[in-house]
Image: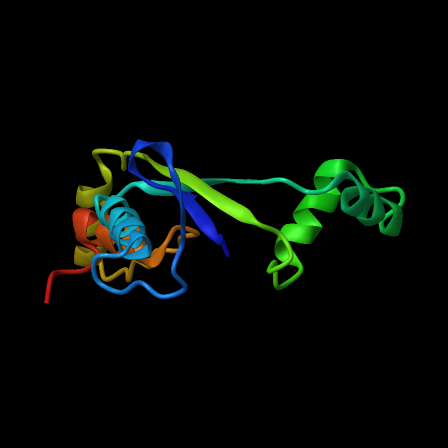
Length: 139
């Protein structure tokens, strides 16, 4: 979890733990939700300074692993309160669905085939894609 983020104009601001209306966290969350609903794949960028001594301890505890493997373990191991992570921003990437998908799904349904979608995307992105290709309808 990021403890701060770059605000408009590049200044670093504290990131609130909750997304109350109007605060920086709410603005960022709304931006991510908007990109995911577009549907875009959202990738966030963050930065952290790790003191040399702490980094060397982490490497020593995980001898035989590359620096990238150690960093991945640190970021996925649990609470990161000791690490001052600054959220820099996010980008949305469009991964277009092939033009024939919608008709293929329709034909499969006509033939009695139930089509299911498996996705590693954010829930909002997957929902927007499913809506766009006709797997679900707006309720």
